[in-house]
Length: 114
Length: 112
Image (cartoon, rainbow over all chains, first blue to last red; front, side, top):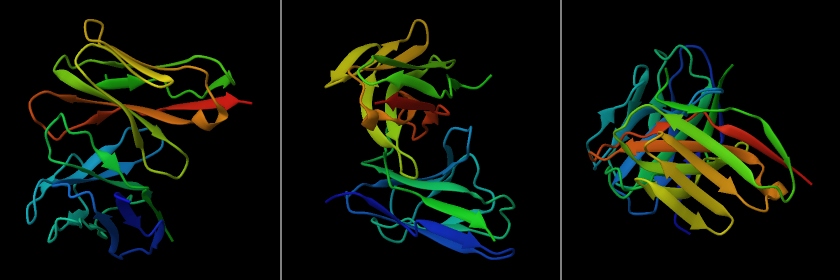
């Protein structure tokens, strides 16, 4: 079955700690995205990548980092510089980044502070 | 003013009712309009995808776009308890941008 797999489902971070969220897709999509979802707010774009070894900042990139070493994988690191990391993190992909290519989502990782 | 406005609900309806979910927007450059359904603790699932104005139907779901009023709607006919979820609208401009703008979501409860 083709799809997007995010892991872990739940993650806890201690103060001063970096944590990495995994996102893997087997849809052969070129473009991948990371969003943050907070109650009462729309999804906000953190980073996106159009091709391997290339990625761009979204609207709220501060305190986050990404890599895109393989087409299938787009991990997100939440660094200690992100002071309010508690949120639901969603990874998405699309065939490419054109407007006429709808994005498909994984089932998310919920990150909380210990 | 937000670029996309969506009533957060919750909206409660009896089983079998027709549901109308709506979003308004301010950016006239938006040409692509999406509706996603999100169950609790899950990721959004693409329901409907439309380009420009007009209607699109898929089973019990109808998406409607009125660009002159900057207003989009999702209608659900014969609503079922399994339709209980949060519905997100999203939209994007025609210029080949990656950027989607999402509404905050409307929570729907269909009562058996």
